[in-house]
Image 1 (cartoon, one colour):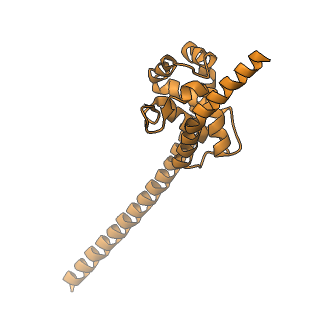
Image 2 (cartoon, one colour):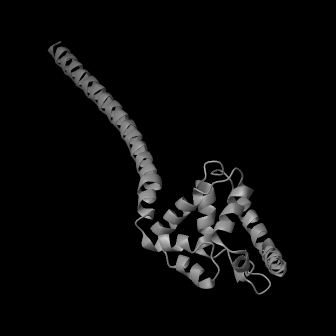
Image 3 (cartoon, helix red, strand yellow):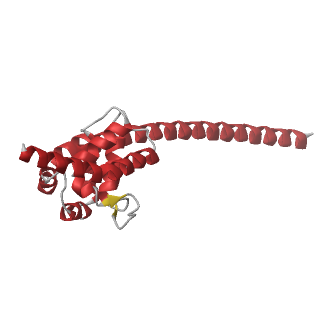
Length: 196
């Protein structure tokens, strides 16, 4: 009989301890899960703040300090390959700043935005020496950093931020395709105005 009471007391003691540990583990896991959720929320908020800061304040402020970019903006629209080469030598941050600044040109649709950006960056004469793929002995446009800058600038426009890259490329191709025709027409108009 004494043995039964000893075992019963021991079993009761073990059950109480097991319940205590189970309860303790449950509370700790619940608190860890809560802390993890809060940390994820804080991380998301921090990422949002950093992106807003990088994309707006830092870039807009830095564009005025970067003399290379200021000089590039003064020479737009580009008329020569040398000007394109200057873009190819820019750092990733400078390319991001360039895209941010060009995105301020705006536009209501992807077609209008892309067309306006291409007019801002390229003269018709220079544009006529490029195709997207480099067909017909023309230069390849798609491998240039300025191509990615134009695509990024279109996407930074709030009205065209969700447009597909293919849609932007289609409009770039169209602009490049018609650049020669626009250049020829422009030259004709200049000659006609000289003769009148």
